[in-house]
Length: 427
Image (cartoon, rainbow, N blue to C red; front, side):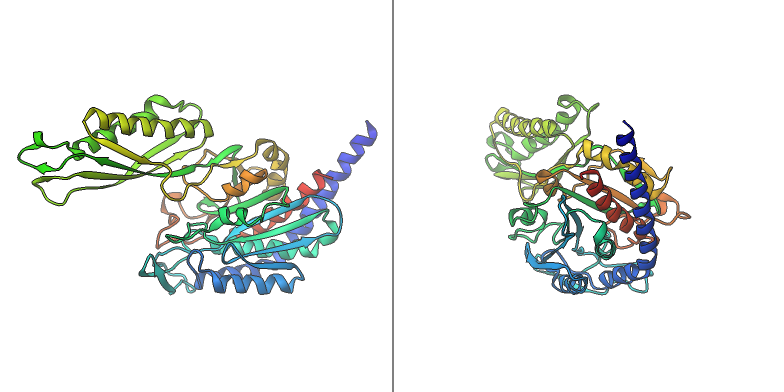
């Protein structure tokens, strides 16, 4: 018993000492992290087009003496730090791409970049914080490289392109990285997302699903065209589509156990017809499904097919359901056992009272593809100034988006401490 207690005590002492060293190094490198973030912010690139971003990251990682692989999933960069000692392979991930958004704020380093998106000229902006994610991971790479002697195993730094979705007709993002073997030798993966409406210095986590699976769908209602003055001569796809829309809304409210998890089914677009006095042949519905439980996800998928086809049949029409239609992401799922194991790291790094378990969000993240391969944690790090009311914080994916750069230091520390502590706990 004494031997076991002594081992635990030594582990705690070692963890606190390492965390103190990480904190000091994070403070020293913070100005450089801010500089990196501002560079990325001023020079954003769209999904699968992160060419200059990748070169910038590659140059720095090579300067650390790391083994670097480029061109992963088109423009991704992956670097390996080998401690030379046996142990797990810990992957740390940051996303790289910007969005087709024109920046409208007062930042002196705001983006003026332009590009092409789906054949149209657009402005480009880091409107979701991926610039901070890259900068934080570069900072963690520096600290962990300097602390190589304290590592047991390997660290894989994964800079992932196209988190926001690959351009039409292309593959990309985490799913493609997995297909190319990035996760084959990995034991665990950690990722962070800055949050513009959460106080600087805080961390948010959740056991289980923290972000939803996303499944786009298309339903085509096929009827029979007729003059609008003689609707009895038609099989009306417009009226049928209206009933399908209302029928879909009853799936969540009447078929799913909402006391367990949330779910959403949205119809986002309806296309059909071109004149007020012509009942068209067909109507197209486009929408999205969000779920946080795999069983509920399967139930909802089956129900969409059933509702659409049977309602259409009752109206003498036909319904063709494509589900999923386009990019589909799994649930971003924090392994509960891993979450329990690493929770002390969050508290020690951020400080007591600054770590909160939160409700899941129905937004989606392709980090989930990594978590399908190995246990992983996805956390939110605060990026809102303390004196700014939450309701006034600029939202993600908006032209006004901005964050408090002082929040990045905690992100750097978390990535480093999660790596060090996981290695210690799996010895």
